Structure formats: structure tokens, C-alpha cells
Amino acid sequence: MTLESVNFSFLLTAENIDLAAEKLMSYLQRLELENKEAIRLRLSVEEILLSWQAKLTEDKEVELSCYKRLGQPVIRLKAEGEGCNPLESQDDEFGVWGESLLARLETRPVYSYNYGVNTVTFRVIHRKRNPFVRLFIAFVVAILIGFLGLSLPNDIRTYIAEGWLAPACDTYLSMLAFSGIPMIFLSVVLGIIGVGDIDVFGKIGRKMVQSYLVVLLAAATLTALIAFPLFRFTIGSQQLQVDYTNIWETALGWIPTGLLDPIINCNAMQLIIAGALIGVALLKLEPQGKHLTNIFTDLNSVLLQVAEWFTRLLPIFLFATLVKSIWLGQMSEIIPAWKSWVVTTGLQAVTFLVMAAIVCWKYRIRLGKLLKKISSTFFIAIGTNSCVASVPDNYAVCAGKLGIDNKVFGFGIPIGTTIFKPSCVIRLIVLSFYVASMYQVKVSLTWFIMAVAVSVILSIAIPAIPGGTLMFFPMLFAQLGLPAQALTAMLATDIFFDAICTAFNQVSVQMALVLQAGTMDLLDKEVLKQ
Amino acid sequence: MNIVKEQSANALNIALVGRLDTVTSPALAAEVSAEALDGITALTLDFSELEYISSAGLRVLLAAQKIMNKQGSMVVKNVNNTIMEVLEITGFVDILTIQ
Image 1: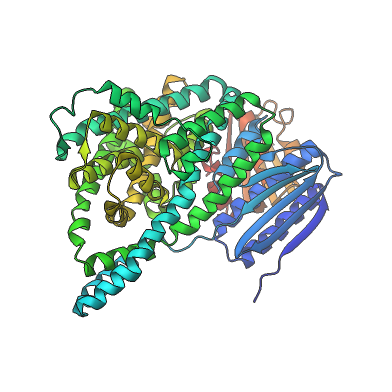
Image 2 (image 1 turned 30 degrees about the vertical axis):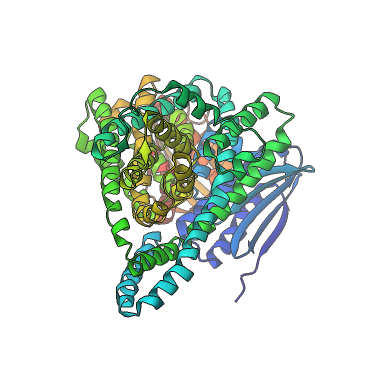
């Protein structure tokens, strides 16, 4: 039975706002959306309509549309009149509260203003089964079929594995690069443009971004130093001396020599430098570059959607990789990869605990009490493998249990979720060290510096979607000269640790915000110690 | 929505009956404005018969809480499951004192 769409045009009176909310709830209930999410959407739509009512007056015509596009439920609000972005209203305490409410949705609405019409669009996400279930099923089925299939004749196994499964796995890796490569560029451009708005937030915003970047670099450097003795590298006796000409040549190689070269060559560092140049130029030229910024923003949204579709195929990739590996006798490449994830998880836990210990020491709070406060955010992130899904709880914990002022976490959580991913940095560094040692890649001091730099920069560009980090593995490998044959094995094992990484990132954001709020005198220590 | 008020000395008790939505919230806003709460040190909002709350209603609660933070205390009591779900989703459980 097809779900009837809703089209309701009305003037912005109080009665009509309530009526629109009723029609929306009715649609969402027919959609069988989870009640909490339906309430969030209703309240968000009401907030947007109230904001427009205040700015555009009651005589403006507004349209509420609820429909499905390619199976995806969409809610759209349109209002004629002067440009008014309700998602950026922060002129009073209601704006701040509204911003928090909108941030608690799993899908952030998108605003646009064209030809005198304000439009806000929500893409409604149905909460599906826990992604781990599909991955676990794929894993179990792959192991069963893999080992049962060993009874097949060798030539049949080889034919299927090399003729069908291996090309499918390679194609999937290319699919990841399809969206991942341009996203590196767009993340840097849009990140710089977004950071430019920090002037609006004044000192708080600037200090926050600075401290995030400093902690990220510190975590990367410490990880490299701690992980180095854990792996056996192939290093020439001269290779640990500083070769300045080598470093200079490598750095020069990062500069893009053509507009499309970074994308064609899949060169991550060139993409980042190109993105930085264009981002700063757009910021400087504002408002002339506004149309290009909008194009980049829209393109980023499209690529995020494509990336989301691709990561849904992860269970199939996992299945194909494991069966292929078992049938071709390549499990010896996959099984040892677990060591790198044990090291990664250990370092992620240590990094987080160091931050937590600093909080405990500074504010005289027991570690057990602090861990209990943040445990809900941690487990939601692990259970959903989504930093976006844990954002609502993150807000609640920061306000109600950690005593952080809204001025800090209201801005700090979205920015932190976007750029502050210390666990991803650790993951990329340990991964590159492990592969280099396992496959006897010749390394040098320059190589180690590159590994740290590329890992930090890529971690900032990683999108906040489940499996987002996986898209960047091919680029990390290409940049560091790591063998592509290792890529499949690392991806197959990484899938299961993605959620742990996400969880540690979220709680690390909380620790960073506590420390930042403390230095700005925006921390309620009584609430923190409760 | 009906608003039932009881005041004794510096304590004001307001019971809401019905829906607190965009149409009815101005009525509550008038009862919990700075002028209306002048001299009140203890405000109690009784939600036992409140069926529904909208974003506009939440704004009024927030404004009232901000006023009472400066001059006394505000308590919200007898919140039913439906309203409590809204308060939890929006994080208002951390802002309001709920009994």
C-alpha cells in the first residue's frame, strides 16, 4: 500500500503551525518512524516555522510537503520572502536551544534560498537493524561457505575466487575511491570556509579549533613514537638520518601542478593543498565565491549520500573477501592483521584515558565516576557505529553530567565530531606501520613523518558516516607506497573495529570540551563532580 | 487550554489542562512573564492534566525557568510519559526541575 504524500499550503498563523505539526506527525506515524525521531522532527519543524513567523510575518505563504524520493522519506518546508535561514538563528536563547534540538536529529536539515523562496529539507532516516548484525551474518556465512567450499575441486575454487570474487573486491575498492577522493578536497574547502565563520563565535571558536588541532597532533606524534618499537621495519642504516633534500622533494610533490591532476592521480596531499588554496580563496573573496561554495556544499551532500550507499555494501565485500581468502589460501594475510587492531584499540584506549586522567586530576574527580558519566555516549556510538547517532546523548551528557556551558558544547560538539578524530589518526598510523612492517616496505624518517602528517590530515577529512574511514584507506596506501594487496585484508578486518574507533572519538570530544570549558571559565565544576 | 492558578504568599502554583501548543502558549507566557512573576520565589507547574506540548510551549517553559533562576525556584510536577518523552528528547530534563 503506497504511503500518501502530504502537501499543505498555509499562512504562518499559530493555528496553521499547529495544524502543520499535526499533519506531519500523522505522516510520520504512517511511515512507522520511531516515536522519538518523529517527535524530534515535529519539534524541529515547529521551531523552523516559529522562526519564520518571527522574521517573515504571518502573511507569508508556507508549504509543507512530505513525500518519498527513491524510497527515502523527505520533509520539505518552503516559505516565500526575504532570505531567512532558521538553522542559523542564534539571536536569543531560543535560537541556541533550537540549534541544539536540530543537532540532536540524526539527519541535519539543509537550507537553501533561491528565487525568493526559503527551503528547508529533511531526509528522514529509518532506523534500520544494527549494522553489526549484517556484518556478523556476512562474517559467519563467509566462514561457513569458505570452509565448506574447500571440498570443491581446486580449479573451481580458483575460477570463482580469481574470476569473480577478486574483481568484485577490486571494484568495491574503486567505488570507495569514487566518492572518497573528491570528498577529501571538498572536506578541506568546506572546512576552511566553516572555520572562517569562527570569527562570528569570537575567541571561543578560535580557541576550540586550535586546541582540537594541537591534541590531534600530540596524539599522532605519541602514537608514532609508541607504535614504532612494536613493529619490525625494513630500514637501511642511512634511512634514519634526516635527509633534508628528500623531505624537500617530497614536500614539493604535494603541490598540485594542474587543476584536475590531484583527482586523476588520487594524490591525497595534492587534494588537500588544492582544497586549502581554494578554500582560503573563497573565504577571502566572499561574497563573490558564494555560488561556488553552494555548488561545493551540494556536491559534498551528494557524495555523502553515494558514500552511504557504498558502505551499505560492506557486508557483501566482507563476504567476498573472506571466501576468496579462504579458497585461495590467503588467510595467513588476514589473520595476523588482527594484531594491528589490538595495538590500535589499545592506543585509542590509552589516549582517551590520558585525557580523562587529566580531567580527573585537574578537577579532583574519580576516574570511575567520570567514565560512568560518559558511558552512555560510548555505548550508543559502539552500538550504532555512528557519531551522528550519539550526538543527542553527547549534548545531554555535556550539559547535564559534565557541567559544560552551552556556549562551548553547542559549537564544540558539531566541530569536534567533524575535525577531532584522534582514534582515526591512531588507526591510520598503526595501520600504515603494520602494513609497512608486514610487507617489508622500505621506510625512512621521511616516510614516518609522511605517515603521521597524512594520517592527521586524512582524519580531518573523514566523513561522519559508518565506515567512512574505510574510503580513505586506498589513498593512505597510495600516498605511503603500501602494497595494494594488503588493502583487502586490512579492510576486511577493520570493519569490526570501526565502531570502537567511533566511540573513542566521541568520548574524546567530551574530554576535550571539559578541558576547554575549564580554561574559559565556562565549566560548572559542581555538576562535573556530582 | 485552561490555566488554573493558586497563589499563597510568594508561591505560585499553575496547573495546565489540555494542550500547550502554538495557539495556547501565549496565554501561559502571560502568566509566567517577568511582571506576572514579580515577587514570586517558588513557581510550581502542575502537568497532571497536560496532554501535549509543542515547541512554542517549550519556549515558554524555558523563559519561565530563566526568570525563576534569578528570583527563586521552579518545579514541574506530575509529568506524564508523553510529555516526559518530549522533555528527554529536547534535553529539558537537564534544564528543568521535574518531580
